[in-house]
Picture 1 (spheres, one colour):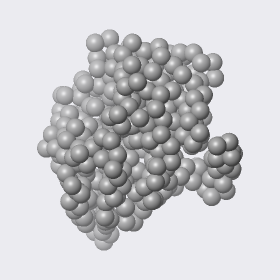
Picture 2: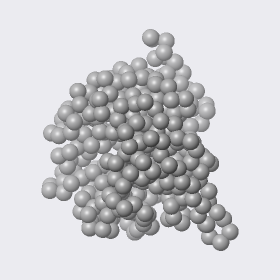
Picture 3: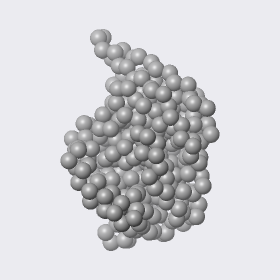
Length: 347
């Protein structure tokens, strides 16, 4: 079933009105989607499916580009490196593969966690891989030495969805307590965030410029904090059940959330008001993502199929918010020639 699309207009200040229109959603005939990772420099999408495959699609035309089949069980951890060269995927058997999305060649393989992988995140320079596993351990893998650089143990506290700051090697992790944390590159706890509601958070994500972090809270809210001060910037309300995922748009102006109430909601970061909504989404809390150019939103419907929804206007590129853009056409041509063209020639 194609979701019902609702477009809202929210006044900003006294004179400006923000409009976000959601175009007609395209539903792809995919296996049930459990994780989504957009290509950070282009229009590709990686999805992890219930049949244990990882599939790469073109967001514009919906064509499948490649399919990775090495995982024996479902891979809930999925991340695309910032330079667009590699995908990391981690499954329920604790196997982690780092591989080329075009020729599917595996360049790294780890199996050192005790339980399944919940989340993966590359650092800015792609030499470190952050892994959150279901034994409540956050592991930093050094991709240069192929060794574990550091582990942070929950010690009785559930840890969720650790992600690197896109501008440095600090990282954030959500917990099922009333306090979530930012850690230093060495793994020390340097900032605490008091998440309202007393039930903790299931997801944490940085803004593109690394100045804010949003938590998806079990009390039905998403909460934005200033990374440097630890103070709450604002609370995003409207969900009637757990919020399972929360992410910033590439230009940092919108936060999208998904909830087990089967809705995806879009909020204006400036006013903290809801500006658009998708309904009939996955009842487990849809995995969500934005393409790097901000033109499409990615989610899964009540049957688990991948959905691609146009955004009008587009929500910019990461470079507009962070000051650096891998979406620049010259850079994209270099990446295509070096990695995509070579992979095609080898076939």
